[in-house]
Amino acid sequence: MSSVNASCIWRAANRLRGHVNRTPLLRCEEIEALAQKEADAAARMLDLPRVPPTMEALFKCEHLQVTGSFKLRGALNAVMSLDPATRSRGVAAHSSGNHAAAVACAAWRAGVPCTVVVPRGTPQIKISNAERFGAKIVLCAPTQRARAETVAAEADAMGGARLVPPYDDADVIAGQGTIGVEMVEQCDDLDAIIVPTSGGGMLTGIA
Image 1 (cartoon, one colour):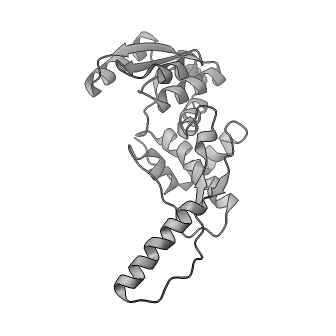
Image 2: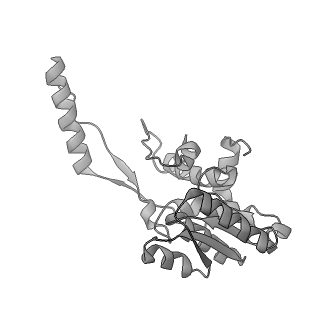
Image 3: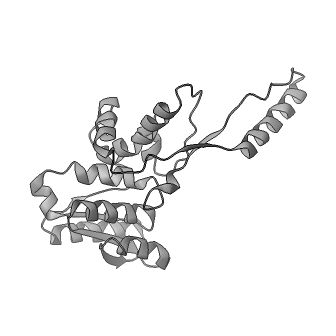
């Protein structure tokens, strides 16, 4: 995988403008109250002065993307970065959820063929979320090895489709990093950004 730097993420941000929702930053007073309660408890335990209630907790509402998650950013950046020859061969991915829908939607918007490999046992609602964008769904055994082998075979059958991984890909990481670009544009005095992580693509891009 090639490296990702700030220039990659700014290019992705410019590429995606108008193609993904610029999701809002919304304040959550319940989380602020919980954090203040924990801070007060820590101050009492350490015999320190009470921390003034000045914190604001803002949440980036990526559930408002058309596919229901931030994954659309990375998938769309990967698809929009394809050269014409690769685009004609299409894209392939494996996923049991949000990445499947994201790649399917990105391919549908770009007008390129798409195959998504899904492990058996995946909830039908997640499969339907990818099918609605016209992706070909291929079921496989619920193991990482089966997923990797099946998607590789499907990509070959498509004539050499571009594999779009869920997180360990420079274009995907740069696309997810556009969340951070929007956040600093929407609030120029952020003190810290807390990022949930699984595969680490969003965390890497925002960092």
